[in-house]
Image 1: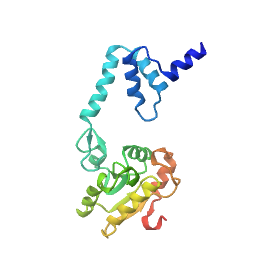
Image 2: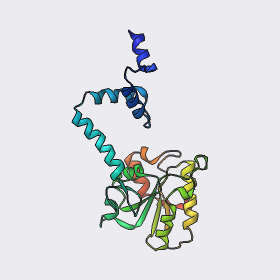
Image 3: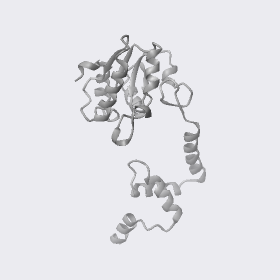
Image 4: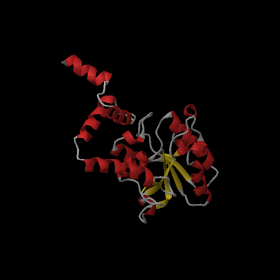
Length: 215
């Protein structure tokens, strides 16, 4: 019996092509293996049709209706995200992050009152990602319009993060009125922001230092 169960999970000899296709769809998600995908599919099969319809509709709406804030490129339900639209935020302080996960991580610290600029990735020649693939130019345009007094570099402390930090610094250093800072190294070298605990990340934001003194 144990051998049969072992073969069932690891060989994945499905009795239904529909089940197999659903498992393949779920297992294409990051961090989801075949066994976990199968549990998801079998769980959904036990639900009422109305629940499954709602499940599917939610993801269709996600793809069709989600927007990107025209100010900061954060994911939003509206043309301007709630952070950029808030009168309580300091619009002249811009925190540069890789993606929406970093916005969520910093917001959870409740230590930052400025706005964000979401790059949509990091410069990575090995993966074919250059500056033109990111939203760096729109950040430069904000600087040209004198909309920014401080740029906080809050990218992951990886080689790609440091490369992107340096590129942006080179693009911005001629704007003398802009103070360019970086989060303090409370976040360990090689770490990604989304995995830092809230206290450490909050202190790193509060205790940020001038970029040129960070190394």
